[in-house]
Length: 292
Length: 329
Image (cartoon, rainbow over all chains, first blue to last red; front, side):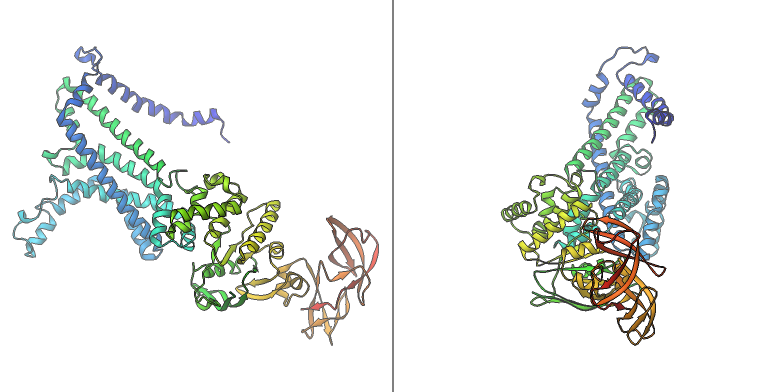
């Protein structure tokens, strides 16, 4: 058994790293966002930058758009992951085992891989439109619908699904395997149908893991820069791109404002995660955080 | 309603798990299936609970061609995300019984099983005995005609086990249930049921009362499984057995060699009968309640017997007698 002192010592490298790079950065960002920026001789502390943020209609529109998009993408990945994980778990055959292994592949590949793959495949000059033109199914490249850099963010959505659905599958399969079929057997024996068993037994048992996967997916979607930068649409900009663009514009006087945006972005992400956890606790299965 | 298991077999991965099981289980009775781990007990219950399909054979009842037993599992399997009330009413809710009726039946069954005050608790807040009562209530609320119990008392400590055994007996009498329960503890089987089937390697070897099983096992496998017996090797000549321990008439189907079956209890007595057994020296004895386990040396062989307390003294020689002619396998 580890003593408290030993535990603190063992964890100290992590805490040092955490305090040095994360907490200090947050504190510095917060101080700057309050208007304390000595490089520009700004030392007066106020909430003006935050007031500006909440009066900035463009920011609020982009923030809301990004949040809704991140939530919808994460929900879709979770729903799809749940269906596939449940299927893999029930079909315990070699074929489903092979597909389960294959489905893990995207977890290991970076987002940029699928971004580039989508650009190669689905842009209007990509492989699929070329193929369709050659097969005579469409007349010209411009007949192929705009999927990438479109206003509906389909390209970004597909990238998130590609990367995050397998993550949900891997997470849920582990929980489903831990649960096994014992509760399903009880439920069926007590007269429940397969659907009732899934809805009343399996789903609540995996619910905490599913919500955790949702939070991780949402947090990534909400803060991801490179995917919306490469596949997004300028008229329907997403928040990380908007904030980063402001930061790299080179206007040093905007730094405190950018910092306030950054902190609002982080706070929004944390609030959504907290709300998700609270909802999870109130839902069936939230009592003990799932299976013990 | 009598239940019939007819030529029931189960083969999985080319391995025969159950082999031609034939049983007749009358209603309003407790039938115990006793067997070691891996003998096919749970597989058999799963078939009776319609959680599995047999490879061949059928399970039917007098007026039901597709009977289904409600199972109480060894590890209780209470849904961890549901309260006791939700667990108990699960079956009714899934069968879309109206809320008023659910509440009424839940109240009754919670009272019968003495868990009314636990209705808002979650399974991880209950003791083993309480969890078992909830599992029983969850099954009983469905008014099952056939209740299946898979090693129901194996996770309980000794005191609680006896309490639950009596409780199950009371429930059986109150609800006129037909109970089939499987166990690998013979004491449990004997205490709960007066009709026990011995399942070994997927085959029902013998169905008898506990007393008959102990005193007249029909095969060496059953005798060995039941344990608590001495098996003495010897030779047979015209229904007479020859060995270091006993030489005399026996009941046997063997012709040349065999093993004399001497259960610890019931067959060998210190009181004189018409069937003299052997003379032995008491080497040691250990007290356990009304009986003592006595170690006796007979012509260089050691045998164990359970005899009434203080009926023999250590280091003394005694003549012993059989209650009836012994059996040789």
